[in-house]
Structure formats: C-alpha cells, structure tokens
Length: 118
Image 1 (cartoon, rainbow, N blue to C red):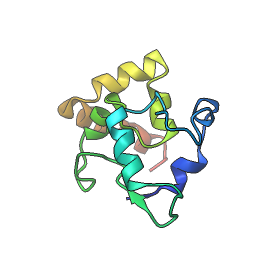
Image 2: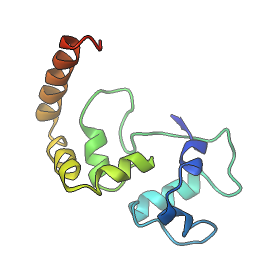
Image 3: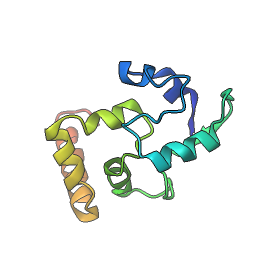
C-alpha cells in the first residue's frame, strides 16, 4: 500500500492542466483512473492508501508491475515516464514476460554485487 499523497504531490505540467477538472490524465488508463477516483475522492484524505500493483497481490515478486505499466496503470509519474521514452518502453514491454523478468533481475543483482553495491 502507498500513501496517496505521493501521487498528489508529484505533478507534471501535463497533470496540472487536469487539476480540479473531471478530465482524466491521458497517461492513465481511464478505468484505472475511475478506480482511483473512487478510492481517493476529493477532498483527499491523507490516510487513504492505494496498492502500487493493481489487480494483483503486492506480496508476490513477479513481472506484473510491467504488465500493469503497459496497461497505463502506473501509480507514480515515474511509472508513466518509463513509457514516454522508446527505449524504456521497449524494455517495459519485454519485462512483462515472467521468465525474462526473473532472468534479467537475477543478472542485474549479480552485476550490482560485483561492483560492491549490495
């Protein structure tokens, strides 16, 4: 679960143009945006929480984040930003595949261990 205030306080110039309107931010899936509006009605309650991984258990380590991201169900601006760059969008597309995600994650962890980060 994540504090909704994070999304509220992280606004891009594009999102500011949708503030205080009934229009949906085009970087969000319209159905997901409607769900968020139901969970987070105005005025916002700072104690409201939202799952960062919609439609899935946030307790499992899997590629679902990338599936949701490619369906425009990213909760944070940084999520939506991944799809604006063709290179990162392609990576997000590939990492939807569970076995590929796990293999790439394992490779990355080994590399980080080799440079003393972990």
